[in-house]
Image 1 (cartoon, rainbow, N blue to C red):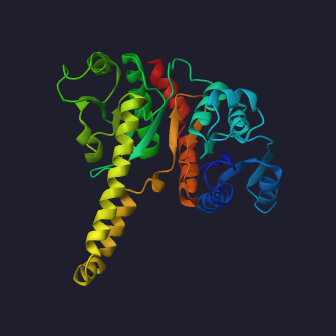
Image 2 (cartoon, rainbow, N blue to C red):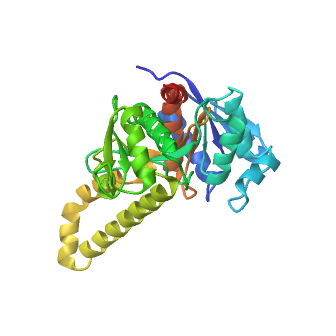
Image 3 (cartoon, rainbow, N blue to C red):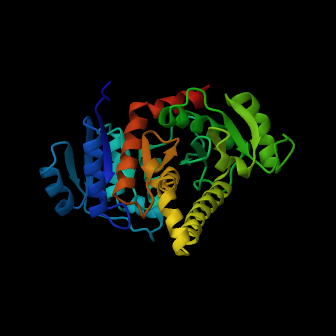
Length: 330
């Protein structure tokens, strides 16, 4: 079955190595998806020549750029012709179904919230990420948008994360867990206890509290927490994975004998590295805004850019925004 045509806006200036890496990622995404259309925002001397040589790319030239160091909300309000703001405006005006950028996370959040607007009923948009785990990939949110939350915010995070797992991971009835320091309903802070009580009745598939070890184990499809805790947990997982892979490589090449063993184990080790590679899963979605917004890491390579665009297209084709709107309205 052929995927339906979908248009995604891509910020040509997003990322540490933009625009060359972004353009290479766009080319890879177009090659992988024959019904994908791209709107490329950025300087005319970057987007116009690229568009002229690619049939499924439309250039929208912009004159401003939001730097990583700028105050996000102020930059969004003052730089209305920036590649990020224009990209979000194109989604708002229905000229595209989604937006991808590996630029400033804060600016992308601010632009999506201020320009696209929030889904009716959503009190706080949240950033999610797909965590590769031993049993199955899972969705972790919030990972940084909201350091301080209320119990009802966590309920909405559960509903939004569940919708994302359905659309992007293809799980028909996702399970949802609340990150805590113990499995019992009475464990944790007052925030966690109150959120648990609300989620029992309000979130379909809620299985109760899960602990930190469950994130890597993949024991549930969606894990909900506040943005402060989620960000710390994610950075810990990323750092630990990188350190372990480095230590395994060093151990396997520390002597001629071990190097021979490493040659035998090279294929399974490469498969493991691929399974936990964040580039495979694209960027992080900002859930709760009226449009698809996928935020890539600043150090994204071409593969990560292509994956982020693919995730945006999948979310758009799966009507993620409408699913979230229905979920929070129940």
